[in-house]
Length: 194
Image 1 (tube, rainbow, N blue to C red):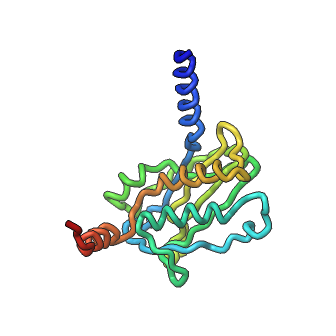
Image 2: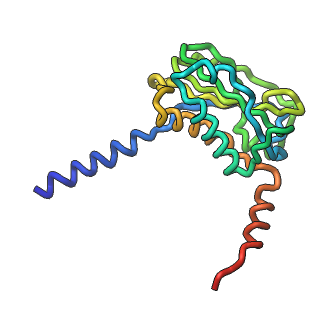
Image 3: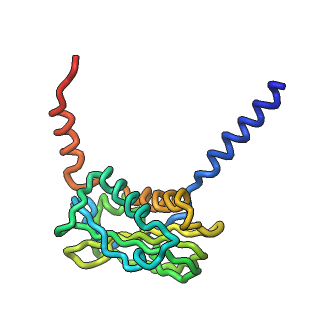
């Protein structure tokens, strides 16, 4: 009888691992982005959040806010460095992105005069787009999008929505300016208990 339990629990464990699959994500960015200098963010007002009751836009904003704060960005309504926008596309769409070097590789050299190589994406039903705008430059500096290439992203399913947002934000790994210096200062200031 014990032999039956081992394969059952192994199957249960593996099915749990596969249920948390990341969605296919693409991103592109502006060569004018000052990614190592941004410190704060706020959300652009999303007019569809008011009209679409099937989607929990609060969930999207909570995840984005939590992630950016974890990376050291301050949520600041007055004159933030970055403005965050997001949109859900329920239908298939043609989308223009760019073939670019990996953003971390590019940021080491930060050449602004590089050429953009346009690339067309045929995105299937169920795409989530997150964009970051540089408020001072008045331009989009980064955009990431998860799509239901292997099937729809069910945006009314909170768990799948969270996975889609996290999958996108995993591609934006810049820490806020001075974040590490502030962390070291905070760590030094904590009292040591013996």
